[in-house]
Length: 168
Image 1 (spheres, one colour):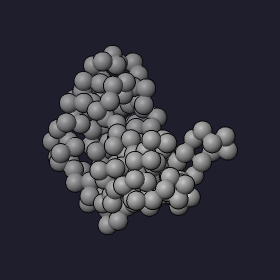
Image 2 (cartoon, rainbow, N blue to C red):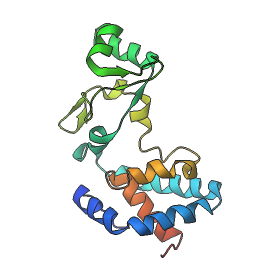
Image 3 (cartoon, rainbow, N blue to C red):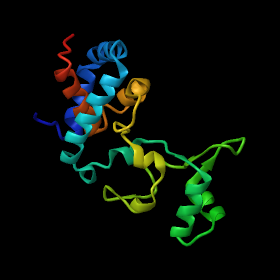
Image 4 (tube, helix red, strand yellow):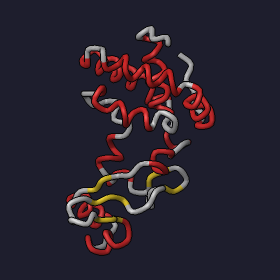
């Protein structure tokens, strides 16, 4: 299996394969979700170690990350600041104060393609690209939204097409 390892290549391929990917999404929804989960997790375990995320950092340039109060507290402690100061500087709160997100894209904590708070990063950061999680078929919209800007997602999806003998 030859991996595609540049963002330029996957961005161009994503444009070329737009119709194919729409058909593939429909195809995936017709498949047994447990079988698809198994295949995705197998490919994720094979492909992810071959991708150097620190050569990319694109997820940190594109994701809107939800944040919990517990994560704010943990990061504030790590950064030796108060929850209030951390929120004022890095977090945007929804009008009903029930949702919090990082207030800039790219993320404040990205420096030279590396996360400066890696050990204390938020759950959304830890989970991305979420290929290790069950119910892949319920996340197809999100997965294909990031297909053109995540080397791991792109390569897993393309290898899935091969393994499932999908041809449009």
